[in-house]
Length: 541
Ligand code: 4UW
Image (tube, helix red, strand yellow):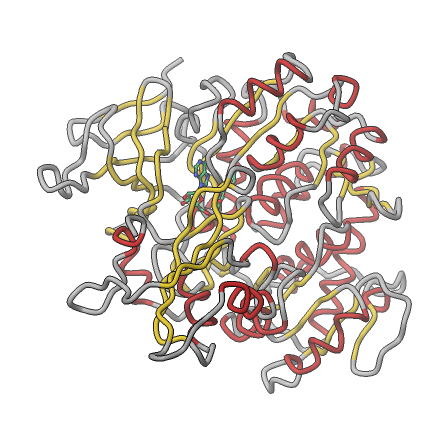
């Protein structure tokens, strides 16, 4: 089979047949497309509580919640903020919001109030879904925002708290399911998701992703990932952990949505830990697993995990950060060599996948998805801006129906990250007969365990410390997390700053994965004439 084609301009195209039909399908309709084939199969089960939903129960709950959302005066184009761990109700809320024509901004429940408030405001959210009374207080200050139409909805908590609504009341049996005629006010180009990403530079931004973007990517990724040529119906017996967070677009689209569409069973893990993963694998004979590199590394090194835990496992898929070949080798030699490993490459701006394939070597990120094109653009003085040939290293540009509409209310950032209809990934790599190899990140984004950390955000937090005059943050290599943030700080004159003092200051303000690994005191921060931090120079200090 032809894996890819290269034209005279060095534009690489997928060798796979184009996907079609994505222009005029709503995201939720695509997910429910085949549901009558498996109404009584379990769709989602919670690892912690055993609470589960069959496909038909899931569909009904989504229809009822969509009706309730509209009754709450939320209108098409309004945004809801979802602050939830991986629980079955996550899928209900997302699919109901999709159906009601609402946009969703997904927030890490481990975020501090400071971080949540920022994201809620950045996305102009009008409703907040959270999971525990414990959080309601913290979110109350956010819910005071005059834009909020629906106060906090508490999912999965028996307690009644003033100013909040219980999720169960929005999905009661007597609520009519959302009717088809109410859907006419949604367009395929409407924004359905607002992933939060720092992109190439600066603070995190809300991305506008349309129904069409996500539907296209679901069809593209399904073609490349689900054993092409095999009818999707054969996958209804698959069992997968929903382990990577559904509040990250990789978990949401590539794990939850893809597999709900084909009738698989998802075991939701609300809180990741090796103990929980071991319990999950012991109780549920998983057949496919999506992970990030640090999890694969932990599995490879954890003596408690043996071949018994992966006896039904066909494949483990990794993405969001580079996967070391040593992890795969150790996994295969120590645990099982029957499990195949595959990497994918994506970004929040790509709804989210660009490359993945079952027949590429595991060190490769795979071949381009159907209907996807790539250019590798020179960044050196002697090849700057030129489209390079196979095996030459440059910046990865991607084009296809999965490329985002743009950054929300930020045309400048959108213009900077796009070259016409090409998305400039800010990643360095090359393409070969074996697919895409990603070598490094050119953009300033730091990735800790696959999670984004924006240096600009940490710099802003650190600048708030009264002993700090100037600061710059970069990512440095970490053997377990991939990378970890390091701050270079210039104290105010005559003041001494102690490393732990600054680490604690940051720890009090941002989620754990953003905490500083290292602090180095310097005399000045290297900057360009225009005042931009020269982060490459910092690595030499
Ligand atoms: N190797 C090296 C990789 C790789 C990588 C990503 O947080 P974001 O915006 O988004 C993601 C999405 C990843 C993803 C989604 C769906 C999927 O199937 C899959 O593979 C299985 C992966 O991470 O961060 C985007 C940035 O993360 C880096 C790269 O720098 C990219 O621009 N990245 N995948 N395989 N680096």
